[in-house]
Amino acid sequence: MEQFQEIIHSNSSVQDKENVINCLFNEVYVRHLSEEDYFQLVNYCLRALASSDTSNDFGKEATTKVLYKLHAHRKNEFNDISLQVVSELISPDVNQPVDILAVTKELLTIDFLEDVVTNEFSDNVVKILKKLRGKLSLTILVDIANVTQLNPKCLPPTQQNQLFCTEIINQISSLNIPLNQLVSFMQDVMTVANMVQKIWLTSPSDIILPCLAYIYTLIADSSKCTII
Image (tube, rainbow, N blue to C red; front, side):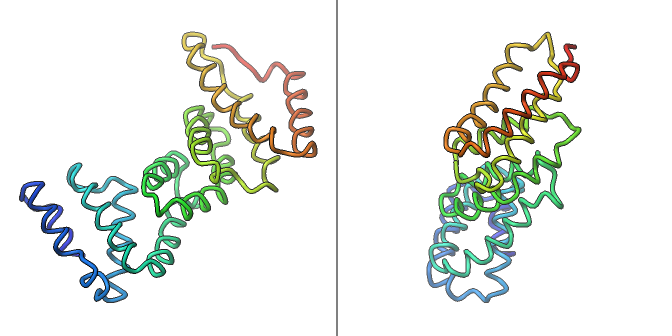
């Protein structure tokens, strides 16, 4: 791993770095890495991509290329390690929602990480929403909507759909309406609402009806919506 970091942070040209990495990380090199070195490399690359912890744009590109090679030549081992690392990166117990969304969007750009990232996000998205309570962050709600619409596997398991939709509705209803940004506010709300609507279109009535009843209760208590 130290050799890789030295290449990334060296003063060599972009082309020279790329050439060295392509030559070094071949099948023979990857297969002969010790379990510890292999783990450290996969762990380092995943966390570097998730946190943009690279010296420059090429550092990110090079890290991605190494990740592809590490995956290609030791897939089973890679899958076990990536599950562990991604689980830590997306856990709402130790990370803030804004960081989890940033990590999720970044890692989803790597095709062979899609399954592990979507599964972890799906399992944790309700917890992420609960962690937002009281913070009134429409931006993060929009991020969740965009991630789940582009990657439907990121939606929560079916048995959590009612809780997920109710939590979304509750947080939207708690937002203050900025009169000087009304158009953008309504556009963002519609983005989130469209996500909920798509869930309803594929859900049984025992999920939809409690949500509608909750909306009716919120409408009846209009004091919860304030114009600023």
